[in-house]
Image (cartoon, rainbow, N blue to C red; front, side):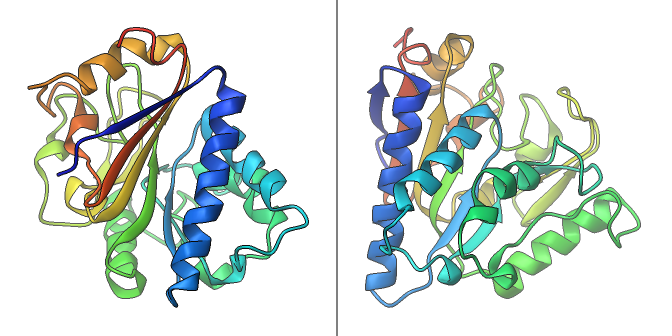
Length: 244
């Protein structure tokens, strides 16, 4: 477990630009060391801003070989593949479609109109894919934070919080729509060199303060259950940091 670093920015746009720049540097360093970087992506409005900023930051530069980066997701909404709620669709439109990525290295979680018979089967299939094709550790895992303290699709008081013997779990009754989701478990999320929480807006301020307070239980604020093995960084705008 690592003590978290906290970085605060005057606006969501400044936060996004900083995270994008840092991601490019981190991926370039991993590639310079002769490895294929593994990144866990998140969704939401701040993630879209970060993805757009990555494209802007790499325009005209060749610091990262994007065809040699593995992309995964920490959670996903179990809806049709073309649904606007899909984290993967948001990431594709804002970032992946604008970079020279290798489709074989883009590992989307299953959609509800995919080949799987059920949400349970879809979650099991993604867990098996991560076991089979994953590197064993995320170099960078980006995560958002809900106003209730949820992380990925692990919600306060949910049974999924106590499942650590598998990689991905079905979430059939999410308190936040859409109700059906797939999430990585703590066991999988914590196999990360660096965990980056990216949080914007005053509506998240209470959850941020609780997550960073001593003694908070992960059953109350699930975000406290995820830490990087080498580094945990909270990237906050002024609104999200306003109760620290």
